[in-house]
Length: 157
Image (spheres, rainbow, N blue to C red):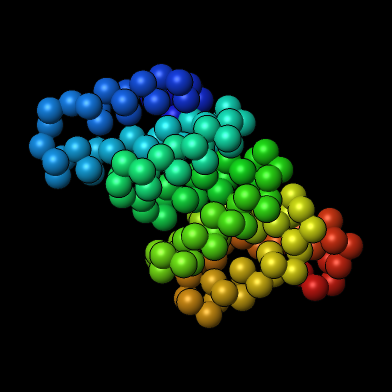
């Protein structure tokens, strides 16, 4: 609910309560990842990319497991704020961790490239998706076309 309402402070408070609770370790780890993803998504909706990255960096310190959805939400937060260089760094972390890429994550990074001067990289992501047999959709192609238009190379799309 906090994620959909964009109430990142409330989502963060719930996350902090959960991490300091007495529930079992396995349940806590699973719940932490789900709530973390919601906190980062709420940050995205409130244009708080800085808080989204702060939460992501916190996971390394607290040894909270991240998944591709965690990175996808953080990439989207950076993209929405026009921080495409940061989004690219996060995408590099996903690839470095050999996390399983999905359509949503690829779309987030394609959109981020569209905010900057990365139309070539946007097209490269589409090619990567085909190579890795990641299902693509209209959103992926529209984002790549938009990035190509901004680079004045619409023929490439």
